[in-house]
Image 1: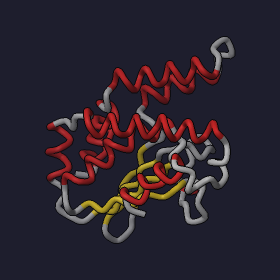
Image 2: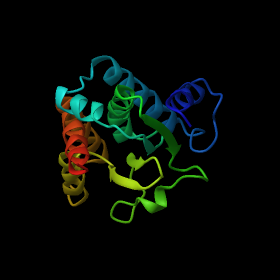
Image 3: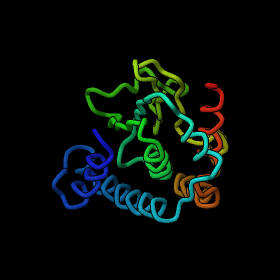
Length: 187
């Protein structure tokens, strides 16, 4: 699906049009509400760096970007807007989105430590060959998550707050730096 159709899912969930599993659970609806606010904030306030803009503008062959995600995913909410903004910089980029839990999802090919962690961005050439994949979160955020997994002294709620605080302080810097490095490795 395209980015507009994906973002419409948020509205459908929040207005009750889509109350399929897991959105028949109030917790998931609340996640979607928070994530829509996060995405909106990053679309409005998130700055794209001159370095990655220059890199993206240098793409001279068509690319297909596939973003595997879900509206309930907090990590995706912080990355989605930046990926969406980057895709609009160069008309040679076609961004499509797959819901991780949909039947046609390719997530099984892009597991992280054996899990279906999202978001995952797969960058492909015009022939469909993978150039690279990125995700599920910037390396610093991933390190926080891995450290939290081994710490039973912090509540699940405090773990979420700690990670959200990192995203708020980072302001999309690390995802751009990591993607910029991956694109530069292609040359």
